[in-house]
Image 1 (cartoon, protein in one colour):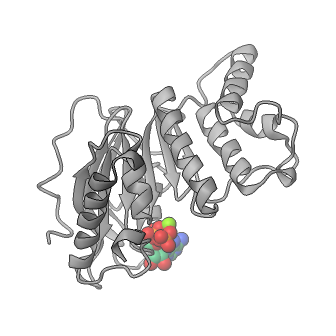
Image 2 (cartoon, rainbow, N blue to C red; image 1 turned 45 degrees about the horizontal axis):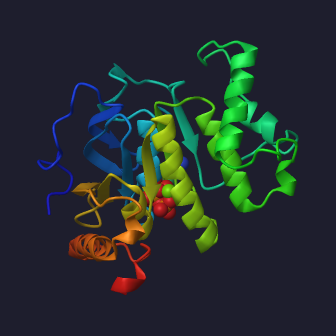
Length: 281
Ligand SMILES: Nc1ncnc2c1ncn2[C@@H]1O[C@H](COP(=O)(O)OP(=O)(O)OP(=O)(O)O)[C@@H](O)[C@H]1O
Ligand SMILES: [Mg+2]
């Protein structure tokens, strides 16, 4: 498997990429590179899942792509421009909702929207954006609840609303639903797809859950190492053209899961903590 070199199977970037990365390398401090020669793109309105085992460097790659860390080599372009710091039209959602406990739902969604680096908008327009985002995640009527009064699923809805209120061109989501129970997680996966389509936000979703990637993504990138001492790279890519809702197409989704699983097993140091679909285990 071709690991650690720019991947021949990656499609050429169209002029209108939301995010484009070329030849990225990154390592912490004096440690060796965690990943190298990573090239990828996310097209406008596209949902791309970045799948890989624990510790392969998914979160680190996401931080570099979001401009939170600088690469040792390579370049990230956001909406066509070189990215050197977090972009106001990008929003992040993490595993923990990280809400401010002293602000209610509305305050948390509103927080940061009028910071200096955000695009200027009038107070009324911002209030309308906040109300619309809260309504879209199903929390209308709960605007005055405080984080301590929310379930984990509701807190993640607030985090999603906070991201959407920025009207992001790109949403970075790092295992946003992995702390939720299975039913809430499935609801949130469907909600995410609905919202990113409605907001026209391209999305890069980091996950170690094959099922989540298959249900949500337009494209799936598999990150991994060919050998233990090598930096990770993008080792496979799948375009998912199964119509939504995907669970109405069990034969096609199962075939794709099995193909991803086979790719994982063909990696010499296949991660053992990847979430394997029930149908394949
Ligand atoms: N701040 C840091 N300083 C030094 N090393 C780090 C730091 N953050 C992560 N690492 C190391 O970088 C490697 C990749 O970590 P990263 O968190 O990106 O992996 P991941 O694929 O997101 O894993 P997981 O699925 O468990 O979230 C790991 O070996 C980790 O120990
Ligand atoms: Mg991670």
